Image (cartoon, rainbow, N blue to C red; front, side, top):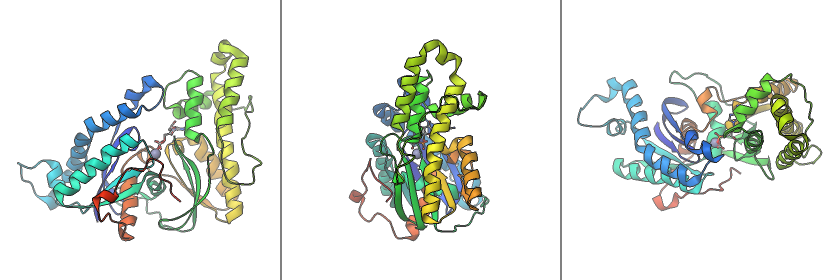
Length: 360
Ligand code: KG4
Ligand code: ZN
């Protein structure tokens, strides 16, 4: 079952072609440079960039696909790669939420247009479900061969979401906890901005922290540490940093960028770990899936690996680097299970953007 998938939920114009869990071709056009001067993603600029790029990204993915499938498809020179690829594509999947409304709209409109032209059926995918399935994506050869062993705990950590979910089988989710204010990635982005760095802040904080003496000098709070639930909160952390920076002044800040980053990252990572460990204890599940942009953080991975080892369990991360950031390959993998479950859009009008769509 070959699926072409589109994700335009935020600042990547992403398209992929997958077959089951195998990613046959993928392209992500990142808009980071467009948004950087503004300190965050500007929805109207995101929409325009998606509109300008989407046809080119689709054609580029189809070209890759046609080139690897050459023998099968045959060549007719008057056709473009998109037309040729669609001879082999069975379904079109698109992210319909959560995300920026006017950015999601671009992908949905394009998916509907392609569905009409090429007479294909549509599948709507939740972006966070995509991040979850990113851990099961494979390369063209079918590696890695990780098998599903339900149930899992799922930690989703991105720029807009921090959630703990329980998944008992394909597509069967229970929300265990979520952030009450900022997301983990958002906290890192805001902290980086206060320290004088551009969006996205997560990678900057990670780099600076790695250069520090690795001592938690500033001891920021661990919000919600003692709450009985599995919810997160990161906005207090941001306020603590703000207050500290006001207190120490510009010169001290510049001198201590590395240790400030280390302590802030430590607070974010520990806050996450406290709740993951609580979830392991509450549910007795010691297999964890982690998805979303913040999973690119090596230190977070290390700490999660250690934690699950302590509980005699295991942790799964997206197996390839491009799968940690926003991409459409993960949407295609999720769509495969949606099709098997019969979740095909019967009436195009049913497929509409849902900026606040939740997983469970
Ligand atoms: O999933 P994603 O690409 O977009 C959303 O769906 O939100 O996540 C983006 C988030 C940003 O907040 C970014 O700062 C964070 O992921 N991020 C990182 C790292 N790389 C990206 N956070 C910590 N360490 C990193 N290396
Ligand atoms: Zn994302």
